[in-house]
Length: 395
Ligand SMILES: NC(=O)c1ccc[n+]([C@@H]2O[C@H](COP(=O)([O-])OP(=O)(O)OC[C@H]3O[C@@H](n4cnc5c(N)ncnc54)[C@H](O)[C@@H]3O)[C@@H](O)[C@H]2O)c1
Image (cartoon, rainbow, N blue to C red):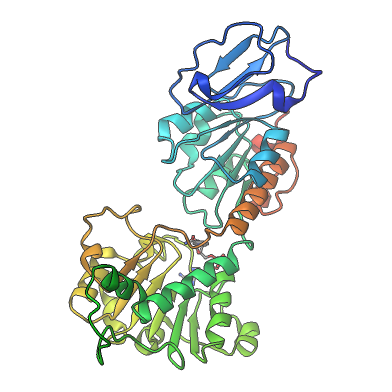
């Protein structure tokens, strides 16, 4: 029997595994050992306020069980806690796959990150799973056809990160073109002796040519930013966007043309079988000598060995990467020895506002899926009402 007259927030808390880290609401019984393998344990109180510690999510008070693979901003986590009996992985590093499997085995919903692979094998090992909500717009970590085949709706977080990511892509372009990070490192290293006529010369951004590979939400926002710098913008996409060509002042061209003409090439496609290593040796060789490449999409769209070769040979002028293959890029990776290769740790969408909005959409997708409703940002609406999502609810 569980408390019903006290608030859920008081009756059920998420605390660190340290017994010192929480104080239960008027516990009358000694607190049991809290040492468990995941960083977070789920604690409930029965009527005698006896602490019950469980490793995984448990059904309590008629709430669906969910597993959340990382701490999210409160805009999302608060919604999740209000509707669900949630277990949250609090580690900085992603939970190992076995932990996700174990924690999701009896869960009705899963909140995943781009570091968590969610495939048919995981879905089969978690027979109650009826919704997956990804905390990202990209969803290459989830095998969508596997989810659809099982009637599991999948959600993602498009839109709210579009401008934030485009801002960052443009910031990378500017930083690489004007060698801002190299300049800052030079000063910090005490190398700044005088104004130098040829010191750290870069490339002009204004009136240069930008080639966009992928003209979806983020690619189009990148084009808008380029307008302010009087850049000529070329784009390629599997879908020609004549509707945007006039309004954004952009020109469609095949990829080879873009590579041959652009001073800056910026990648904005999803990672798919077609875009994996899209930028390979042959494609780098087609790029204009001295051009720069910017990647804020997904690391494996660029073959890192081919990029290294193109930078080492001097054919490419530079690279600015928010995403890499592998991720994270090891500190001794040869790309990091190239002064004209700027690498940052996958933070293009990392503004406080955007990450909060992403968390809220992510929570709303999860809750809608649990309720059997259409996800606000669903990737496979055809899954709804079939398979798992049509089964009677267990809470
Ligand atoms: N670095 C980050 O933090 C971050 C943040 C947001 C998004 N992303 C990545 O950026 C990608 C794009 O996001 P979006 O919201 O603009 O997506 P989107 O779906 O709106 O746009 C992607 C575009 O790429 C096009 N495309 C697909 N395959 C292509 C191909 N083979 N060649 C050319 N064009 C192709 C599509 O037609 C579409 O227009 C996401 O898939 C995600 O992986 C990264």
